Structure formats: structure tokens, C-alpha cells
Amino acid sequence: MNKYEAEFSNIVRSFRKKHMGKGPSKITTTFCKNWAICEMEGNLSPVEKFIASATEGKQALREARTEMVKQMYKKNPPVEMEEFLGCKFVDLFVDIDIDRDFGMSIFVFDEDLQEKYCK
Image (tube, rainbow, N blue to C red; front, top):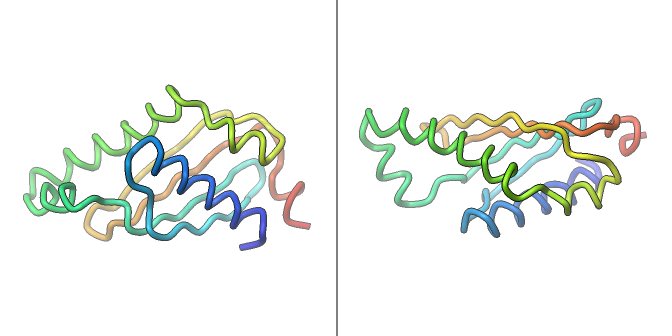
């Protein structure tokens, strides 16, 4: 992870903490073409872990969490990311493995981040 990817990870953590009350404990970002791929550990709050302890709670939590994250970025465009990268945020793909407390977010931008920041 280079310094731009590391700083992007910090921006993601800060954004999630600001809008969700808790950010992941660890984020690793990789720029690939126009994607910023973030691998995130330690996403779940104690209450969410309790909900996930019930079989029927896992799927409901996964669906709620992935949809909630997508809606959060729609309602609160990630201006900090755009300013840092100097390009426009286009889309977001999100998933989480509740059992492992491991999530991935793929941020799509309108420019090739790999070309711009990984030379």
C-alpha cells in the first residue's frame, strides 16, 4: 500500500466513523484501474455481533449493512475522497462476511487511479 492508498484508507475510516459512529479497525486499500478496493476488518459493533449470533440475524444484518453503506454514500457524497484524488466518485460496490467481520468496498472513480498514483 503506497502513501496515497494509505491516506485513502484514513479518509474511508473517518467517513464511516462520522456517518456510522464506528469505522473499521483495519483498512487496506489497493488502487486498480479506476477502482479503490478497500478490504476492511473489525466493522461490526458489539450490538451487531450479538444480532449475528442468531442464524436468522446474520443474513438480515448483512443485507441491512450493505444497503445502509450504499445509501450513506448516496446521501453524503464523499467530497473528501474526490478532493484528495482529484477525480469524481461514480459508484460503490459493498459486501461483508458477517462471520469473519471482513468487508470489502470498491469505490469507482472517473479516472485511472492506478495510473495516476501507483507509478
